[in-house]
Image 1 (cartoon, rainbow, N blue to C red):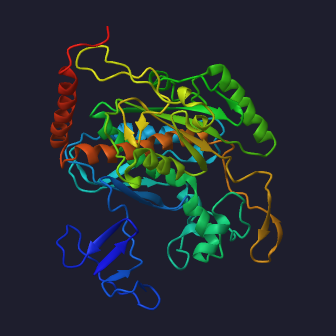
Image 2 (image 1 turned 90 degrees about the vertical axis):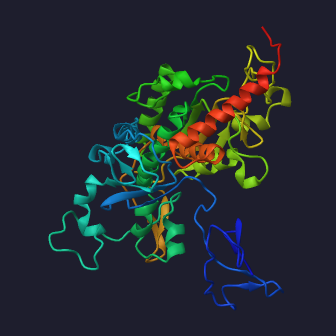
Image 3 (image 1 turned 120 degrees about the vertical axis):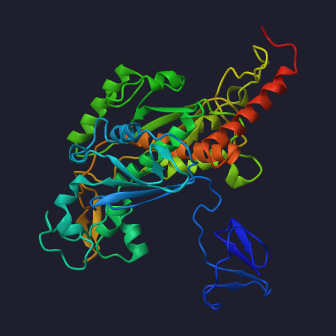
Length: 455
C-alpha cells in the first residue's frame, strides 16, 4: 500500500525507511479516495517540511505572553553569538514610520535548549522572546477559561469589523472565529521577530563559511532608486543600522521620509521595496532537476510569506520581462587568473541560473504593500450585524519597509543555510567544513588544469 503525503513524498508500507509510516485512521468514505486499486489510498496526512535540512516553527500572539521558536537541524559545534542575535532583533524594530509598539518592546531572545557552553549541540534549539506589552493585555489575552484574579491591563471588546487587506475576514471564515482578535493576534507581523531570531542563527552558520548578508531599501511608494542604480554588497553593508530608512542614497532617503510624513498626515500607510544581497555564496546550491528543489523558487516563497509582501524579484526581477535577451543574460568570460572560475561582467540573474547558485551574489527583492491598518479606516462590515461599518483600528505603523528588509535577510539566510546543509551536509561543523573544502578543492582543480587565462 502507498500513502501519499502532502503531495511531495510517499511512504510505502513494508519497505524499509528512515521514516515510519503513519497509521491511517481516516474513514474510507469521507477522508480517503479509492482510485480503483486496493493498494493505493490517498490520505490527508500532513508532513511539515519533511524534505528540509533546516526548519523552524514559531508560536505566540502579538499581545500574548511570548513568542516561542524551535529551530531544528542546526549542526553541532557552531559558536553562538547571542549578542549578535539580539542585535538583529533590534534592527527589526527600527526604521522611520514605525508605530508606538516599538517604543514598548525591546526584544531579546532567551535560548532555552540546544546550546551548551556557547555551542550548538545538534539538538533542536528552543528560544523565547517575551512580550513586554503582555502586562497591558492580560485581561484580554489570558489563556485560562476564566480571567485569573489580579490580571492586569484592560478587557477589550471583541473585534468584529475586518480590515481590508488583512487576514481578518479570511481567517475568521477559515477557523470559524466570532472574535477576529483570534485571527489578528497570530496573523500580526509581531511573529516576524521569531523569524529574525531563527534567521540570525542561520546567518551565523553561513558566516562560518564566508557567506554574508545585507539589505537596503530601494523604494518607498513611488520614490525609488533609478533602475540602473546597482547597490553593491559592500555599499549595503556599510549603511548605518540607525539610518532612518537604510537607503543607500541619503538624498533620496530624505524624499522617502517626506513621503511617509505626508501619508501619516493623511491617516494613510505606504509600502515599498527592499533588496537582500548575499555574498560569498558558493556555486551549486539548489538544483534544476525538480521544481521544488529550485533555489530561486524556495527563496521567492520564503520572502513572499513575509507579512504584506506581494511580489518577489530575483536579480533584475520583473524588468527581465521587458528587456531583450542581450540585456538580460549575463555573459561568461574566461578566468582572469589561474585556478579561478570564468567571470561574469554583470549579475542580472541575481546569482541564480536554472534554480542553482552560480557563485555570484544572490540578490532578492521584496515588494511590500502598505500596512492594512489605516488611521482613517476603509469601509468594512460588522460581522455581527452585517451592516456598513469602518474597519477596525489596531495600533499600526505608517511604513515598515526597513523592518521587512531585516526579516527578508533572515528568511534568505534560512533558505541559503538549508540549501548549504543540503549540499555540504554533516552532523557537526567540522564535518561540514571537510565537505566544503573538498568541494572547493575539486572546483580549483578543474580550472587549474587549463594553462591559459585572460590577462
